[in-house]
Length: 215
Image 1 (cartoon, rainbow, N blue to C red):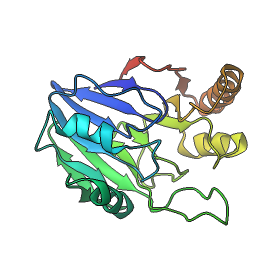
Image 2 (image 1 turned 90 degrees about the horizontal axis):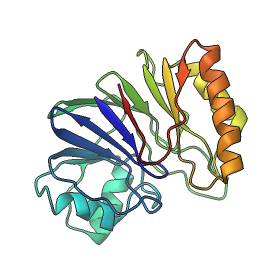
Image 3 (image 1 turned 120 degrees about the horizontal axis):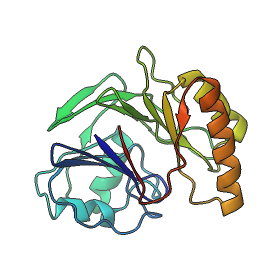
Image 4 (image 1 turned 180 degrees about the vertical axis):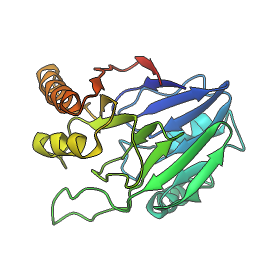
């Protein structure tokens, strides 16, 4: 399975000639070459994780492509589009094409008590890659081979990121959710994620947008 990191929180997984898109949002370059997409996963409703335009770029090329997301995303999409969303929640298992997806968690991490906490699901793909969206939800009862680690956001502290990696204990990790960081900020976060991953016996890959990794 080939993983390609796009800008910010977006990922592409490719297997057996089919693609799975995760969280293409407003900080991600306009999607191109979306043919043979098996599915789309949106972890939550914030614009940096999805936009109607990004979703339309996939659906227009793949009219019957399924979109999986929590209820909050389904409501947000329905308000601006006729695109159908299949609602998923913690405990659901979905098979689509060559991809098996297991969903975990319920809520976005708290940004501030004055701001509403929206729905958020993490997803484990093919028992290999875990992506928690905007949360530190640890997928219970599974071993995570590869972890997408949030590197910078209004809702996190680097100490929480370190604790998250230490709790999951992945064999591999790479940074995501870092478009709000300067180059210096990315380097600092990468160093901390690398150290935590290696403490657990894993390997860190400092992927930049456009980089790929074979899982």
